[in-house]
Image (cartoon, rainbow, N blue to C red; front, side, top):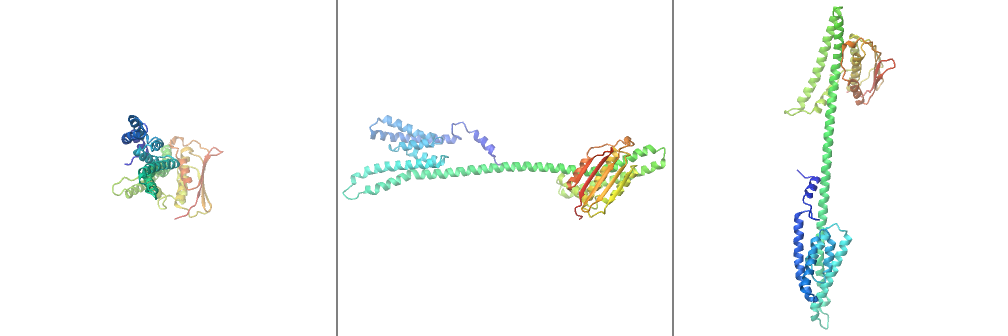
Length: 439
């Protein structure tokens, strides 16, 4: 597993607490360099004291103080370079100058400051080298051109370049590499965060899809069973009322209840069969089948022409409601077109659920079912008058999901759905669906 940016920051924060150092090895390295630099400058301070006539202890102390400045190279690299430039005439601080220039070039100090300080270091080293070399070869000067005319400037130039160029170039390379690594690390952290967000969104979408499929399956089950079971309850109530008064009518009602029950069981068995077949196909090899896959199989199967209801079955649907005692009239306008299977199924379900609601909430009310074929669309309306209370004893339960399911079906196909009470005290359900294309 890879560590995220937050993990790296937390790991880095555990090593902080050493002033400006981030790691213990950085402390050890800088302390070691400072000790070596201080020792070097102390030894060079002895020679400096002898050349200038200062007391040797004073020269040693001066060297120790100057060399120990290297300890703060990470925090104040400019100070280290300035001290090394200042001690150049005393010919001390060789290590301090190299390390200081390297640190300055590798740091985030503006490049113009780095160029200026590098130039000052180069000029100082060139002047000191030129003076020392000229003093060394002055005894060889003759009447004609001597070595000081070309040897001294050339060697001084090489010495100055050797004291500045390698350190500065190495620092620039390391600084650029460090910045590149930080940029890549930040980009990796950004990608990890984006992947985490994408994973969260994918999980949200998957959960949303599962919820949608569960809702669709529940809606299908509701549409398949609720209508016929409601009719069965109505017929059972009528059977109870006329069992002793009119035995022949009671027998007819009992037969109707049996037919309704068998039809409900058949439709329920077909729906469960679709779910089982979808699960067996998708779950080959013993794997668990996702609910979304089962829901898609059920939805597709329910929309198939050979399995789903058709608009031509609305007349039989109305006849069943008439047999249950409902005063319902059916009117059809226009000629039926070649609608898509899901359009015909949705139109049938809307009429079916609307009639079921009339059985539940307005038993005995006069009802009108209207279908209108308008070329590229089909409209349906189910309207009932005020209830007379005759069916109150039926005790039909209501889950409150009928209108919601109808609306979801219609809007899902790009149609229009309107429902609400009428001025006469009844209720009206209207829907318009685009025809789509058959096949």
